Image 1 (spheres, rainbow over the protein chains, first blue to last red):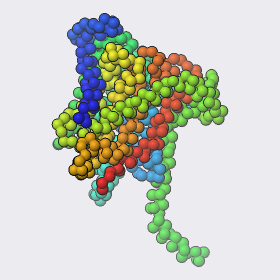
Image 2: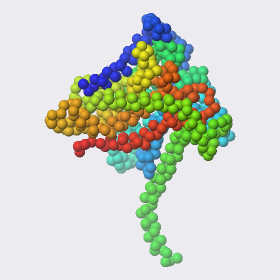
Image 3: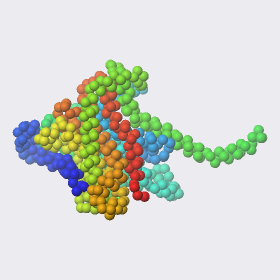
Image 4: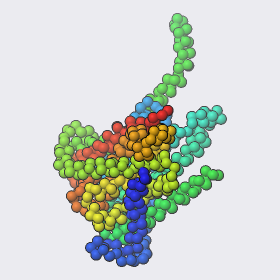
Length: 282
Length: 291
Protein backbone atom coordinates (compact mmCIF):
# COMPACT_ATOMS: atom_id res chain seq x y z
CA UNK A 1 0.00 0.00 0.00
CA UNK A 2 2.65 2.50 1.08
CA UNK A 3 4.87 1.46 -1.79
CA UNK A 4 2.26 1.72 -4.53
CA UNK A 5 2.62 5.43 -5.45
CA UNK A 6 6.40 5.19 -5.59
CA UNK A 7 6.33 1.96 -7.58
CA UNK A 8 3.86 3.44 -10.07
CA UNK A 9 5.99 6.57 -10.44
CA UNK A 10 9.20 4.60 -10.94
CA UNK A 11 7.54 2.43 -13.57
CA UNK A 12 6.06 5.41 -15.44
CA UNK A 13 9.11 7.67 -15.33
CA UNK A 14 11.99 5.20 -15.46
CA UNK A 15 10.62 1.85 -16.62
CA UNK A 16 8.41 3.19 -19.39
CA UNK A 17 11.08 5.52 -20.87
CA UNK A 18 13.63 2.72 -21.04
CA UNK A 19 11.22 0.34 -22.77
CA UNK A 20 9.88 3.08 -25.03
CA UNK A 21 13.43 4.07 -25.93
CA UNK A 22 14.27 0.53 -26.93
CA UNK A 23 11.19 0.35 -29.15
CA UNK A 24 11.86 3.79 -30.67
CA UNK A 25 15.42 2.77 -31.49
CA UNK A 26 14.04 0.19 -33.94
CA UNK A 27 11.65 2.65 -35.58
CA UNK A 28 11.89 5.51 -38.02
CA UNK A 29 10.65 7.92 -35.38
CA UNK A 30 10.70 11.49 -36.69
CA UNK A 31 8.57 14.62 -36.63
CA UNK A 32 6.32 13.01 -39.23
CA UNK A 33 5.41 10.43 -36.60
CA UNK A 34 3.82 13.15 -34.49
CA UNK A 35 1.43 14.08 -37.31
CA UNK A 36 0.69 10.68 -38.78
CA UNK A 37 1.14 8.56 -35.67
CA UNK A 38 3.08 6.07 -37.76
CA UNK A 39 6.61 5.00 -36.95
CA UNK A 40 7.69 2.32 -39.43
CA UNK A 41 9.76 -0.56 -38.10
CA UNK A 42 13.32 -0.37 -39.45
CA UNK A 43 15.11 -3.10 -37.52
CA UNK A 44 18.69 -2.31 -36.59
CA UNK A 45 19.02 0.40 -39.21
CA UNK A 46 19.20 3.20 -36.61
CA UNK A 47 22.04 1.45 -34.82
CA UNK A 48 23.91 0.89 -38.09
CA UNK A 49 23.46 4.55 -39.03
CA UNK A 50 24.58 5.83 -35.65
CA UNK A 51 27.62 3.56 -35.33
CA UNK A 52 28.87 4.03 -38.88
CA UNK A 53 28.39 7.79 -38.83
CA UNK A 54 31.61 9.75 -38.87
CA UNK A 55 30.93 11.39 -35.56
CA UNK A 56 30.47 8.19 -33.56
CA UNK A 57 34.18 7.50 -33.10
CA UNK A 58 34.84 11.09 -32.05
CA UNK A 59 31.92 11.08 -29.61
CA UNK A 60 32.97 7.75 -28.12
CA UNK A 61 36.55 8.89 -27.66
CA UNK A 62 35.44 12.23 -26.20
CA UNK A 63 33.08 10.44 -23.80
CA UNK A 64 35.91 8.19 -22.64
CA UNK A 65 38.38 11.07 -22.25
CA UNK A 66 35.81 13.29 -20.56
CA UNK A 67 34.76 10.57 -18.12
CA UNK A 68 38.20 9.20 -17.27
CA UNK A 69 39.82 12.66 -17.10
CA UNK A 70 37.07 14.04 -14.88
CA UNK A 71 36.94 11.03 -12.58
CA UNK A 72 40.69 10.71 -12.04
CA UNK A 73 41.21 14.42 -11.35
CA UNK A 74 38.09 14.75 -9.17
CA UNK A 75 38.98 11.71 -7.17
CA UNK A 76 42.63 12.58 -6.57
CA UNK A 77 41.87 16.19 -5.67
CA UNK A 78 38.81 15.17 -3.64
CA UNK A 79 40.89 12.67 -1.66
CA UNK A 80 43.60 15.28 -1.10
CA UNK A 81 40.98 17.74 0.18
CA UNK A 82 39.41 15.06 2.40
CA UNK A 83 42.77 14.12 3.93
CA UNK A 84 43.54 17.78 4.43
CA UNK A 85 40.23 18.52 6.15
CA UNK A 86 40.70 15.52 8.45
CA UNK A 87 43.38 17.49 10.29
CA UNK A 88 40.55 19.20 12.14
CA UNK A 89 42.12 22.63 12.25
CA UNK A 90 40.21 25.72 13.39
CA UNK A 91 37.37 26.62 10.98
CA UNK A 92 37.74 23.32 9.09
CA UNK A 93 34.04 22.52 9.49
CA UNK A 94 32.97 25.89 8.11
CA UNK A 95 35.41 25.73 5.20
CA UNK A 96 34.29 22.19 4.39
CA UNK A 97 30.66 23.20 4.16
CA UNK A 98 31.44 26.29 2.06
CA UNK A 99 33.31 24.00 -0.32
CA UNK A 100 29.96 22.41 -1.23
CA UNK A 101 28.85 25.54 -3.07
CA UNK A 102 30.17 24.62 -6.55
CA UNK A 103 28.26 21.35 -6.30
CA UNK A 104 25.00 23.00 -5.23
CA UNK A 105 24.89 25.70 -7.92
CA UNK A 106 22.73 24.96 -10.95
CA UNK A 107 25.02 23.51 -13.63
CA UNK A 108 23.90 26.06 -16.16
CA UNK A 109 24.91 28.84 -13.77
CA UNK A 110 28.39 27.33 -13.42
CA UNK A 111 28.60 27.02 -17.19
CA UNK A 112 27.64 30.66 -17.68
CA UNK A 113 30.16 31.90 -15.12
CA UNK A 114 32.99 29.79 -16.50
CA UNK A 115 32.14 30.72 -20.06
CA UNK A 116 32.74 34.33 -19.15
CA UNK A 117 35.87 33.60 -17.08
CA UNK A 118 37.30 31.63 -20.01
CA UNK A 119 36.34 34.10 -22.72
CA UNK A 120 39.32 34.52 -25.00
CA UNK A 121 39.28 38.29 -25.34
CA UNK A 122 37.76 39.62 -22.14
CA UNK A 123 37.84 36.65 -19.75
CA UNK A 124 39.56 37.09 -16.42
CA UNK A 125 41.72 33.98 -16.83
CA UNK A 126 43.48 35.32 -19.90
CA UNK A 127 43.60 38.75 -18.24
CA UNK A 128 45.41 37.04 -15.37
CA UNK A 129 47.81 35.28 -17.76
CA UNK A 130 48.57 38.59 -19.48
CA UNK A 131 49.70 39.86 -16.09
CA UNK A 132 52.48 37.26 -16.24
CA UNK A 133 53.32 38.20 -19.80
CA UNK A 134 51.66 35.10 -21.21
CA UNK A 135 49.53 35.06 -24.31
CA UNK A 136 45.79 34.41 -24.65
CA UNK A 137 44.61 30.84 -24.69
CA UNK A 138 41.51 30.09 -26.79
CA UNK A 139 40.03 27.99 -23.95
CA UNK A 140 36.68 27.20 -25.51
CA UNK A 141 37.23 28.07 -29.16
CA UNK A 142 40.17 25.86 -30.09
CA UNK A 143 39.49 22.29 -31.14
CA UNK A 144 42.61 21.08 -29.34
CA UNK A 145 41.97 22.84 -26.01
CA UNK A 146 38.17 22.86 -25.60
CA UNK A 147 37.80 19.28 -24.32
CA UNK A 148 40.49 19.79 -21.69
CA UNK A 149 38.81 23.01 -20.59
CA UNK A 150 35.42 21.35 -20.31
CA UNK A 151 36.96 18.54 -18.26
CA UNK A 152 38.57 21.15 -16.00
CA UNK A 153 35.23 22.84 -15.32
CA UNK A 154 33.60 19.47 -14.65
CA UNK A 155 36.38 18.64 -12.19
CA UNK A 156 35.72 21.91 -10.37
CA UNK A 157 32.06 20.90 -10.02
CA UNK A 158 32.89 17.34 -8.91
CA UNK A 159 35.52 18.03 -6.24
CA UNK A 160 33.04 18.89 -3.45
CA UNK A 161 31.05 15.67 -3.98
CA UNK A 162 34.21 13.52 -3.90
CA UNK A 163 35.57 15.37 -0.89
CA UNK A 164 32.34 14.92 1.06
CA UNK A 165 31.97 11.19 0.44
CA UNK A 166 35.66 10.43 1.03
CA UNK A 167 35.76 12.61 4.15
CA UNK A 168 32.82 10.62 5.52
CA UNK A 169 34.72 7.40 4.79
CA UNK A 170 37.85 8.69 6.52
CA UNK A 171 35.85 9.59 9.63
CA UNK A 172 34.72 5.96 9.93
CA UNK A 173 38.28 4.64 10.27
CA UNK A 174 38.92 4.06 13.99
CA UNK A 175 41.78 6.27 15.30
CA UNK A 176 43.13 3.31 17.34
CA UNK A 177 44.29 1.72 14.10
CA UNK A 178 46.57 4.67 13.43
CA UNK A 179 47.92 4.47 16.97
CA UNK A 180 48.63 0.77 16.55
CA UNK A 181 50.23 1.41 13.16
CA UNK A 182 52.47 4.16 14.54
CA UNK A 183 53.70 1.76 17.25
CA UNK A 184 54.75 -0.52 14.40
CA UNK A 185 56.54 2.43 12.85
CA UNK A 186 53.96 3.12 10.17
CA UNK A 187 53.28 6.84 9.91
CA UNK A 188 52.75 9.23 7.05
CA UNK A 189 52.74 7.54 3.65
CA UNK A 190 53.10 4.08 5.21
CA UNK A 191 50.04 4.67 7.40
CA UNK A 192 48.15 5.78 4.32
CA UNK A 193 48.99 2.67 2.27
CA UNK A 194 48.59 0.22 5.18
CA UNK A 195 45.63 1.65 7.08
CA UNK A 196 43.79 4.40 5.22
CA UNK A 197 43.64 2.97 1.70
CA UNK A 198 42.58 -0.62 2.53
CA UNK A 199 39.86 0.58 4.90
CA UNK A 200 38.70 3.28 2.52
CA UNK A 201 38.34 0.86 -0.41
CA UNK A 202 34.58 0.28 -0.15
CA UNK A 203 33.95 4.03 -0.08
CA UNK A 204 36.39 4.47 -2.97
CA UNK A 205 34.38 1.97 -5.04
CA UNK A 206 31.11 3.75 -4.37
CA UNK A 207 32.67 7.11 -5.21
CA UNK A 208 34.15 5.89 -8.48
CA UNK A 209 31.12 3.94 -9.68
CA UNK A 210 28.75 6.82 -8.88
CA UNK A 211 31.24 9.22 -10.45
CA UNK A 212 31.38 7.31 -13.73
CA UNK A 213 27.63 6.75 -13.85
CA UNK A 214 26.97 10.47 -13.33
CA UNK A 215 29.81 11.76 -15.52
CA UNK A 216 29.12 9.59 -18.53
CA UNK A 217 25.69 11.21 -18.97
CA UNK A 218 26.73 14.85 -18.37
CA UNK A 219 24.96 17.18 -20.75
CA UNK A 220 24.30 20.55 -19.10
CA UNK A 221 27.92 21.60 -18.74
CA UNK A 222 28.94 20.74 -22.27
CA UNK A 223 25.86 22.31 -23.83
CA UNK A 224 26.35 25.42 -21.70
CA UNK A 225 30.05 25.84 -22.41
CA UNK A 226 30.52 24.74 -26.00
CA UNK A 227 27.33 23.14 -27.36
CA UNK A 228 29.54 20.25 -28.40
CA UNK A 229 31.78 22.44 -30.54
CA UNK A 230 34.03 23.75 -31.88
CA UNK A 231 33.79 21.30 -34.79
CA UNK A 232 32.42 18.52 -32.54
CA UNK A 233 35.60 18.54 -30.45
CA UNK A 234 33.57 18.32 -27.22
CA UNK A 235 30.70 16.25 -28.60
CA UNK A 236 30.01 13.20 -26.39
CA UNK A 237 27.54 10.37 -26.84
CA UNK A 238 25.10 12.13 -24.52
CA UNK A 239 25.26 15.47 -26.34
CA UNK A 240 25.17 13.79 -29.74
CA UNK A 241 22.07 11.87 -28.68
CA UNK A 242 20.45 15.18 -27.69
CA UNK A 243 21.52 16.63 -31.03
CA UNK A 244 19.95 13.77 -32.98
CA UNK A 245 16.65 13.78 -31.09
CA UNK A 246 16.03 17.43 -30.39
CA UNK A 247 17.93 19.29 -33.11
CA UNK A 248 17.56 16.92 -36.05
CA UNK A 249 14.31 15.44 -34.71
CA UNK A 250 15.40 11.91 -35.49
CA UNK A 251 14.17 10.33 -32.29
CA UNK A 252 14.89 6.81 -33.51
CA UNK A 253 18.60 7.46 -33.97
CA UNK A 254 18.74 9.54 -30.78
CA UNK A 255 17.19 6.62 -28.90
CA UNK A 256 19.65 4.16 -30.43
CA UNK A 257 22.61 6.27 -29.37
CA UNK A 258 21.33 6.81 -25.83
CA UNK A 259 20.73 3.06 -25.49
CA UNK A 260 24.38 2.50 -26.34
CA UNK A 261 25.18 4.94 -23.54
CA UNK A 262 23.11 2.92 -21.04
CA UNK A 263 24.83 -0.29 -22.08
CA UNK A 264 28.30 1.23 -21.63
CA UNK A 265 27.34 2.62 -18.24
CA UNK A 266 25.83 -0.70 -17.08
CA UNK A 267 28.76 -2.75 -18.36
CA UNK A 268 31.17 -0.52 -16.52
CA UNK A 269 29.25 -0.76 -13.25
CA UNK A 270 28.97 -4.56 -13.46
CA UNK A 271 32.60 -5.16 -14.41
CA UNK A 272 33.86 -2.77 -11.80
CA UNK A 273 31.74 -4.18 -8.99
CA UNK A 274 32.73 -7.76 -9.97
CA UNK A 275 36.43 -6.94 -9.99
CA UNK A 276 36.11 -5.17 -6.73
CA UNK A 277 34.25 -7.98 -5.01
CA UNK A 278 36.91 -10.38 -6.21
CA UNK A 279 39.67 -8.13 -4.88
CA UNK A 280 37.94 -7.90 -1.50
CA UNK A 281 37.37 -11.68 -1.39
CA UNK A 282 41.01 -12.34 -2.11
CA UNK B 1 73.75 38.58 34.06
CA UNK B 2 74.16 35.97 36.70
CA UNK B 3 70.84 36.99 38.21
CA UNK B 4 69.18 36.00 35.04
CA UNK B 5 70.76 32.59 34.92
CA UNK B 6 68.19 30.80 37.04
CA UNK B 7 65.02 32.18 35.44
CA UNK B 8 66.57 31.56 32.07
CA UNK B 9 67.01 27.90 32.83
CA UNK B 10 63.48 27.64 34.13
CA UNK B 11 62.29 29.28 31.00
CA UNK B 12 64.22 26.82 28.89
CA UNK B 13 62.70 23.95 30.76
CA UNK B 14 59.22 25.35 30.26
CA UNK B 15 60.00 25.92 26.65
CA UNK B 16 60.90 22.25 26.27
CA UNK B 17 57.60 21.31 27.86
CA UNK B 18 55.43 23.67 25.81
CA UNK B 19 57.24 23.73 22.52
CA UNK B 20 55.39 20.80 20.93
CA UNK B 21 52.05 22.32 21.87
CA UNK B 22 52.96 25.72 20.49
CA UNK B 23 54.22 24.06 17.38
CA UNK B 24 51.08 21.98 16.97
CA UNK B 25 49.05 25.08 17.56
CA UNK B 26 50.97 26.88 14.86
CA UNK B 27 50.63 24.06 12.30
CA UNK B 28 46.89 24.03 12.99
CA UNK B 29 46.55 27.70 12.15
CA UNK B 30 48.84 27.20 9.19
CA UNK B 31 46.38 24.54 7.99
CA UNK B 32 43.58 27.05 8.44
CA UNK B 33 45.48 29.54 6.30
CA UNK B 34 46.03 26.93 3.59
CA UNK B 35 42.39 25.92 3.83
CA UNK B 36 41.22 29.49 3.38
CA UNK B 37 43.53 29.90 0.39
CA UNK B 38 42.24 26.70 -1.24
CA UNK B 39 38.69 27.81 -0.66
CA UNK B 40 39.38 31.23 -2.17
CA UNK B 41 40.60 29.47 -5.32
CA UNK B 42 37.66 27.08 -5.39
CA UNK B 43 35.10 29.81 -4.80
CA UNK B 44 36.70 32.39 -7.08
CA UNK B 45 34.16 31.76 -9.87
CA UNK B 46 31.36 32.50 -7.41
CA UNK B 47 33.06 35.73 -6.38
CA UNK B 48 33.59 36.61 -10.02
CA UNK B 49 29.92 36.03 -10.80
CA UNK B 50 28.92 38.50 -8.06
CA UNK B 51 31.65 40.97 -9.04
CA UNK B 52 30.63 41.05 -12.71
CA UNK B 53 26.94 41.25 -11.84
CA UNK B 54 27.68 44.55 -10.07
CA UNK B 55 29.83 46.06 -12.80
CA UNK B 56 28.38 48.68 -15.09
CA UNK B 57 27.37 47.25 -18.43
CA UNK B 58 29.55 48.44 -21.25
CA UNK B 59 32.32 47.57 -23.62
CA UNK B 60 34.96 47.28 -20.89
CA UNK B 61 37.74 45.11 -22.28
CA UNK B 62 39.21 44.43 -18.87
CA UNK B 63 36.79 43.97 -16.01
CA UNK B 64 37.70 45.49 -12.64
CA UNK B 65 38.80 43.05 -9.94
CA UNK B 66 36.52 44.65 -7.38
CA UNK B 67 33.05 46.15 -7.80
CA UNK B 68 34.18 49.63 -6.77
CA UNK B 69 31.68 51.38 -9.00
CA UNK B 70 28.90 49.00 -8.06
CA UNK B 71 25.71 49.37 -10.03
CA UNK B 72 22.47 47.46 -9.99
CA UNK B 73 21.72 47.97 -13.68
CA UNK B 74 22.47 44.32 -14.42
CA UNK B 75 19.94 43.22 -11.84
CA UNK B 76 17.31 45.63 -13.13
CA UNK B 77 17.70 44.30 -16.66
CA UNK B 78 17.93 40.64 -15.55
CA UNK B 79 14.84 41.00 -13.39
CA UNK B 80 12.98 42.64 -16.24
CA UNK B 81 13.87 39.72 -18.56
CA UNK B 82 13.71 36.83 -16.12
CA UNK B 83 11.09 37.63 -13.44
CA UNK B 84 8.51 35.43 -15.15
CA UNK B 85 11.03 32.61 -15.52
CA UNK B 86 11.94 32.85 -11.83
CA UNK B 87 8.26 32.44 -10.93
CA UNK B 88 8.01 29.45 -13.28
CA UNK B 89 11.07 27.84 -11.66
CA UNK B 90 9.64 28.49 -8.21
CA UNK B 91 6.27 26.91 -9.08
CA UNK B 92 7.91 23.86 -10.63
CA UNK B 93 10.32 23.41 -7.72
CA UNK B 94 7.60 23.76 -5.07
CA UNK B 95 5.31 21.40 -7.00
CA UNK B 96 8.08 18.86 -7.27
CA UNK B 97 8.81 19.08 -3.53
CA UNK B 98 5.15 18.35 -2.73
CA UNK B 99 4.86 15.47 -5.22
CA UNK B 100 8.20 13.98 -4.19
CA UNK B 101 7.46 14.03 -0.47
CA UNK B 102 3.93 12.68 -0.92
CA UNK B 103 5.23 9.78 -3.01
CA UNK B 104 8.56 9.18 -1.28
CA UNK B 105 7.67 9.42 2.42
CA UNK B 106 5.30 6.42 2.63
CA UNK B 107 7.64 4.43 0.40
CA UNK B 108 10.63 5.23 2.60
CA UNK B 109 8.63 4.16 5.66
CA UNK B 110 7.62 0.87 4.06
CA UNK B 111 11.15 0.18 2.85
CA UNK B 112 12.57 0.90 6.29
CA UNK B 113 10.04 -0.77 8.58
CA UNK B 114 8.02 -3.43 6.74
CA UNK B 115 9.34 -6.86 6.12
CA UNK B 116 7.46 -7.49 2.91
CA UNK B 117 8.43 -8.97 -0.41
CA UNK B 118 9.40 -6.46 -3.03
CA UNK B 119 11.50 -4.25 -0.76
CA UNK B 120 14.65 -5.53 -2.41
CA UNK B 121 13.20 -5.09 -5.89
CA UNK B 122 12.12 -1.50 -5.25
CA UNK B 123 15.50 -0.60 -3.73
CA UNK B 124 17.29 -2.19 -6.67
CA UNK B 125 15.01 -0.30 -9.04
CA UNK B 126 15.89 2.98 -7.35
CA UNK B 127 19.60 2.29 -7.65
CA UNK B 128 19.27 1.30 -11.31
CA UNK B 129 17.24 4.44 -11.97
CA UNK B 130 20.33 6.48 -11.08
CA UNK B 131 22.09 4.95 -14.07
CA UNK B 132 19.49 5.97 -16.61
CA UNK B 133 20.63 9.09 -18.47
CA UNK B 134 18.19 11.99 -18.40
CA UNK B 135 18.33 12.14 -22.18
CA UNK B 136 16.73 8.66 -22.35
CA UNK B 137 13.86 9.79 -20.15
CA UNK B 138 13.51 13.03 -22.10
CA UNK B 139 13.52 11.22 -25.44
CA UNK B 140 10.65 8.94 -24.44
CA UNK B 141 8.72 11.56 -22.48
CA UNK B 142 8.75 13.99 -25.39
CA UNK B 143 6.74 11.55 -27.47
CA UNK B 144 4.43 10.65 -24.59
CA UNK B 145 3.95 14.28 -23.51
CA UNK B 146 3.16 15.24 -27.08
CA UNK B 147 0.22 12.83 -27.06
CA UNK B 148 -0.86 13.80 -23.54
CA UNK B 149 -0.54 17.56 -24.21
CA UNK B 150 1.95 17.92 -21.37
CA UNK B 151 4.66 19.66 -23.43
CA UNK B 152 5.11 23.29 -22.37
CA UNK B 153 3.22 22.74 -19.15
CA UNK B 154 4.18 23.22 -15.54
CA UNK B 155 2.64 19.89 -14.37
CA UNK B 156 4.61 18.11 -17.11
CA UNK B 157 7.87 19.60 -15.93
CA UNK B 158 7.04 18.95 -12.26
CA UNK B 159 6.52 15.25 -12.98
CA UNK B 160 9.63 14.92 -15.14
CA UNK B 161 11.83 16.91 -12.75
CA UNK B 162 10.79 14.68 -9.85
CA UNK B 163 12.87 11.90 -11.43
CA UNK B 164 15.78 13.47 -9.54
CA UNK B 165 13.96 14.20 -6.29
CA UNK B 166 11.94 11.04 -5.68
CA UNK B 167 14.73 8.41 -5.67
CA UNK B 168 16.94 10.68 -3.59
CA UNK B 169 14.14 11.45 -1.12
CA UNK B 170 13.30 7.76 -0.72
CA UNK B 171 16.92 6.82 -0.03
CA UNK B 172 17.65 9.62 2.44
CA UNK B 173 14.38 9.23 4.38
CA UNK B 174 14.68 5.46 4.45
CA UNK B 175 18.15 5.79 5.97
CA UNK B 176 16.65 7.97 8.67
CA UNK B 177 13.60 5.79 9.28
CA UNK B 178 15.74 2.66 9.68
CA UNK B 179 16.78 4.23 12.98
CA UNK B 180 13.26 4.60 14.32
CA UNK B 181 12.92 1.83 16.91
CA UNK B 182 10.22 -0.64 15.93
CA UNK B 183 9.15 -0.64 19.58
CA UNK B 184 7.50 2.79 19.44
CA UNK B 185 5.56 1.87 16.31
CA UNK B 186 4.55 -1.45 17.88
CA UNK B 187 3.46 0.42 21.01
CA UNK B 188 1.18 2.63 18.93
CA UNK B 189 -0.31 -0.42 17.25
CA UNK B 190 -0.97 -2.03 20.63
CA UNK B 191 -2.91 1.12 21.49
CA UNK B 192 -5.12 0.40 18.50
CA UNK B 193 -3.51 2.53 15.80
CA UNK B 194 -3.49 1.09 12.30
CA UNK B 195 -0.53 1.26 9.96
CA UNK B 196 -1.70 4.53 8.49
CA UNK B 197 -2.40 6.08 11.89
CA UNK B 198 1.02 5.01 13.20
CA UNK B 199 2.63 6.49 10.11
CA UNK B 200 0.82 9.80 10.43
CA UNK B 201 1.05 10.40 14.14
CA UNK B 202 4.36 8.73 15.04
CA UNK B 203 6.60 8.36 12.00
CA UNK B 204 5.91 11.70 10.32
CA UNK B 205 6.58 13.89 13.38
CA UNK B 206 9.75 12.00 14.29
CA UNK B 207 11.02 12.18 10.72
CA UNK B 208 10.33 15.89 10.36
CA UNK B 209 13.99 16.81 9.91
CA UNK B 210 14.54 14.08 7.34
CA UNK B 211 11.51 15.39 5.43
CA UNK B 212 12.92 18.91 5.50
CA UNK B 213 16.28 17.68 4.26
CA UNK B 214 14.70 15.66 1.45
CA UNK B 215 12.45 18.58 0.56
CA UNK B 216 15.30 21.10 0.41
CA UNK B 217 17.40 18.91 -1.84
CA UNK B 218 14.43 18.12 -4.09
CA UNK B 219 13.79 21.83 -4.41
CA UNK B 220 17.37 22.41 -5.43
CA UNK B 221 17.48 19.54 -7.95
CA UNK B 222 14.33 20.78 -9.63
CA UNK B 223 15.34 24.41 -9.53
CA UNK B 224 18.62 23.45 -11.25
CA UNK B 225 17.01 21.28 -13.91
CA UNK B 226 18.09 22.17 -17.39
CA UNK B 227 17.68 19.05 -19.51
CA UNK B 228 13.91 18.65 -19.12
CA UNK B 229 13.36 22.38 -19.43
CA UNK B 230 15.33 22.28 -22.67
CA UNK B 231 13.68 19.23 -24.19
CA UNK B 232 10.10 19.31 -22.92
CA UNK B 233 9.34 22.93 -23.84
CA UNK B 234 9.05 24.17 -27.39
CA UNK B 235 7.70 27.68 -26.87
CA UNK B 236 8.54 30.51 -24.52
CA UNK B 237 5.29 30.16 -22.56
CA UNK B 238 6.78 27.97 -19.86
CA UNK B 239 10.44 28.73 -19.35
CA UNK B 240 12.42 28.13 -16.16
CA UNK B 241 15.32 30.40 -15.19
CA UNK B 242 17.94 27.83 -16.27
CA UNK B 243 16.62 28.01 -19.81
CA UNK B 244 16.58 31.80 -19.61
CA UNK B 245 20.28 31.80 -18.74
CA UNK B 246 21.05 29.30 -21.50
CA UNK B 247 19.43 31.60 -24.02
CA UNK B 248 21.42 34.52 -22.65
CA UNK B 249 24.72 32.70 -23.16
CA UNK B 250 23.66 31.09 -26.43
CA UNK B 251 23.34 34.37 -28.23
CA UNK B 252 26.32 36.64 -28.42
CA UNK B 253 26.08 39.12 -25.63
CA UNK B 254 28.23 42.06 -24.64
CA UNK B 255 26.17 42.68 -21.54
CA UNK B 256 27.64 40.17 -19.13
CA UNK B 257 26.61 42.05 -16.01
CA UNK B 258 22.99 41.16 -16.83
CA UNK B 259 23.85 37.51 -17.45
CA UNK B 260 25.77 37.29 -14.18
CA UNK B 261 22.97 39.08 -12.31
CA UNK B 262 20.56 36.41 -13.57
CA UNK B 263 23.08 33.75 -12.54
CA UNK B 264 23.26 35.23 -9.04
CA UNK B 265 19.46 35.19 -8.78
CA UNK B 266 19.43 31.55 -9.91
CA UNK B 267 22.05 30.73 -7.25
CA UNK B 268 20.06 32.08 -4.30
CA UNK B 269 18.39 28.74 -3.41
CA UNK B 270 21.78 26.98 -3.40
CA UNK B 271 23.27 29.57 -1.07
CA UNK B 272 20.24 29.46 1.22
CA UNK B 273 20.36 25.65 1.28
CA UNK B 274 24.04 25.71 2.14
CA UNK B 275 23.30 27.86 5.18
CA UNK B 276 20.04 26.19 6.22
CA UNK B 277 20.61 22.52 5.42
CA UNK B 278 23.77 22.42 7.52
CA UNK B 279 21.47 22.36 10.54
CA UNK B 280 18.94 19.95 9.06
CA UNK B 281 21.50 17.43 7.90
CA UNK B 282 23.06 17.40 11.36
CA UNK B 283 19.63 17.17 13.00
CA UNK B 284 18.61 14.36 10.66
CA UNK B 285 21.69 12.38 11.59
CA UNK B 286 21.33 12.70 15.36
CA UNK B 287 17.53 12.65 15.59
CA UNK B 288 15.62 9.89 17.37
CA UNK B 289 12.84 9.83 19.91
CA UNK B 290 13.80 6.88 22.10
CA UNK B 291 17.27 6.59 23.51
